[in-house]
Structure formats: C-alpha cells, structure tokens
Image (cartoon, rainbow, N blue to C red; front, side, top):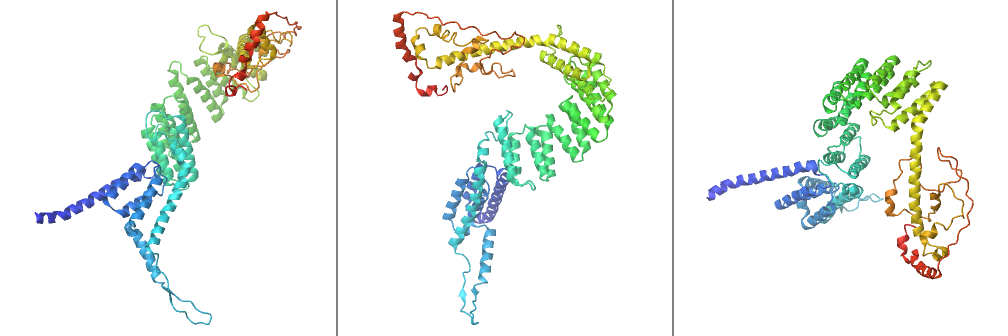
Length: 597
C-alpha cells in the first residue's frame, strides 16, 4: 500500500494542478465578458474566495489590483480587503514573479552604483561614501500599497461621475416587457457621457462594454443597435460594426423594418449595393410589405445609382399591389409620392399630372391626394394650363357632406381642403370662381363654427361661474357682508347691483379672483376643459364693445338701478353678526390658505 501511495502521489498532485488551472481559466473566461461591469462583484467575490482557499497570496493580490482599476459598486470594500491582506502578509508573498523580477532588476542597478566620488576644488578625492542599494522592505511595501491606492482613487473619481446613471438602471437584464421612458433616456444619457469621456478615435474597452450591457437590456429597441453600429463606424472598427449589424438584423430585432432600412443605407454607403437591395427586398416581401418609407428609400437609391426606370417600376409594382387591397390607406400616398418623384427626378410634368389624375379616379375621398394635385398645379411655371372646373368638381365632391357615408371624411378635413382651394383660387382663379367658392365655404362651415364658438362661450361662462363661487367662499367678508350674514346667498348676488355697469355676458362680472389664487383640487376636472380651442380659457370681464362672431353688437350700458333695501327682522341681525366671526378664514390655520393667498 505504501508503494502504491507513493506511485499515485505525483499523479494526484498533477491532477490538482490541472483542476486548479481549469478553474482559474473558467473564472478568467467569465471575467473577460463581465469583469468591468459595475455590478460584477459577485463573480469577483467567488474568484477571491477560490484563491483564498488555495492560499495563493500573489494571485489574490493581483485580483485585487485588477478590481481597483475599474469602477465597481463594492470598490471601497475591495480596497479595504486589499489593505488588510497587505498588512498581514509579507511583500514577497504578495508580488507575482514578474513584479519580483522587476524589483530585483532595480536593486541590481542600484548595487552597481554603490560608490560615488566627490571631487574637491583642489583636485583631491574624498573618501568613498556608501549609497543605499535599494529601499527597505517596509518602504517597498508602502510603495506597493501607494500604487494601488492611486488606482483606487482614480476609479473612485470616475465612479462618482457614473453613480447616477448606474443607480437609474432598474433592469440590467433582458425581458420581453418594454422598458419605461426614464430608463431608456438614462441609457442614452449614459452612452453620451461615456462617448464624451472616451476617445472615439480608438475603441476603448469601456465604450464597448457599456454598449454590450445596453443591448442586453434594450435588445428589442433598434435605435440602440443603430447607435452602437454608428459609434463603431466612427471609431474605425468596421469589423465590429458589421458584427453588431448582423446580430441586430438576424437575431434580436430582425422583425422590425427600421433596422433593415438602416442596414440598406449602411451597406450602400460601404459599397455593398447587392446587400442594400437585398435588405430592401426583405422589407418588401417579408418584414413589412407595402411600407411607404421602404418604397421611397429604395426608389431614391435606384435613382442615385442611375437606374431611373427601375425606380419607376418599384412605384408601379407597389401601386398594383395596393390596388388589389380593399380600403388601402397607403395607395393615396403612393400616387402622390410617385407623381412627386417623377416630376423631381425626370422633370416630366405631364406624366406626373397623369399619375395624380389616375390616383383621383382610383381613390375616393382622399385629402392628401387632392392636396398634392393642387400643390402640383400651383408650382407649375406660367403659362398655366389648369382646368379650374375639373379641380373645383373634385373639391366639391370631397367637401360636400355625403349622407350615405358620413364618417368617411371628417368635418375638419373638409374645411381644411376647402380653405386650401380658396387660397389656390385667390392666386390663379377669376373673381366669379372665387365668389362662388367663398359662398359655398361660408354656407358649409361658418354656421358650424358659430355653433362651436357658442358652445365654447357657454363652457367659459360655466367655468367662470364656478370659479367665482370659489372666490367668494374663500374671500374675507367685509363688514357690510357680515351684517347680512344670515342671508348670504340672497344678499351677495344683489350686493353690487347698479354699482357697476352691466357688461355682456353677466356671468363674467362675478369673476373677482383673490391675489395668488390657485384652482382648488376639487375643480381639477375643469382644468383641461376647452383645451382644444386656440384661445386661452382664462375667464375675464368682457368690455362693452366686444363682438361675438355673428352676434349683434354688445348691448348698451344698463342704467344704474338703485339698490333696494331689504328690511330684516332686528332679532335676525344680531345672531348673524355673532356668527360672522366664526366664518372668517382667520379661524383656519394659515397653512391651509397657503395655496390660495
């Protein structure tokens, strides 16, 4: 047995060394991916624990040195642990073989210069003076720790700059649920900061690592992949940029058209025309068939390459496909864009006009198409050959209400197109056509506008009335009001009658707001009321000469009516005066009125 044990001992020793190397290699492999991450401390802790069990103090000290080079959430703890290790172990056990060789080389150079001679002015030589051959072990240890402390301070300074970004990252891992807007903005801000701090002329490890962290949490957002690619391109790392592009288009966001449109433009810029065409074709056939942006960009690329007929065929094929669909929303814009492209790229105005006319005949009730036709005719050079009757018939057909399909075109769209056509006629039409269209516009839309303005005024009056009530309820009553406190509702509405001239509408006269008054929370439901109207909804007293659209002129000033005195029983006055002080706002703590006064 002794002989067998002696034979197996070397084998076991070699096995332990092999296992140790394998385990260290596994740790190093993991640290190569996430070693510089801000939250990488769990992996570092396991590595430290493993080396501590092996009692390899030099490797342990080297691990601490590597940690102190980069910001880490537990940086202070690691620095304190390193100082504790340096205080308990001799320097010879902490230094690696390379570090010990450097120290030994410095000591030998110092030993070669152990004697220096001083020459007196008379030429005589002094006795030789010994020079220290090197630092003591305590000084070497102090220098060893000082170097690591300087690394720690630099990492700590950088940590103070990024701590805000790091703490705002609530989800550093991937999840199918979307990130909130705050986290998405934080990633953009963090990347902006790192790109400012780093040198984009060369790809630093810090920039790449942060982008890799970002595209884990934001893997479903094409804009971060696009930003990563552009950053690598700006730094000259085209291989890395192409690698990121392939991961985005083939794995992570392969079903989103914007990344493929970016890929087509990126490949075109790099000279890969076949790859750019393939990216566009993938969008047309699989990712998003009929996508207008893809058709326009693909046609523009073919035009840049001198393939004008190929660009025309792209639009024609897309229009043919959309014609086969029922109620296509893309078809009107396709006709408008195709006409515009033909006119700008080839200068063929007649063909561009035919495309628009064909679109009008194939697409019913399309405001963008009619607007494109009016704009096209407006930009034609003189002499103009505009068929005004034909254009007017198209516009009339669009703006006239259709009882069979009332919800196809909104009233706002009809009014807007009518206004555009009126502007067109003012430039290029005759007086009779202008008058005819103005009368039709007034007949169709002005009555509706008057009704909407009337409803708006009613809403303002209702809101002003409520706010006036709140102002009265929170204002300090005067002595005259205290005297009639028993009948507040009956008296307050007649208190100022005849004192001021009555302006129209009467409801706005009661609108006296205290200084610094803020709308109470209970009336928050009215905060957005009437927000769709262009004018501000702040209630104000209306002067006598204010006109109200189609309404007659303001009523003349009413003659002042003498205020009537309402006799009250004598017994009722005294209790009212006694109750009045209890209704004073001063009885309520001042903090309650802080938001009103």
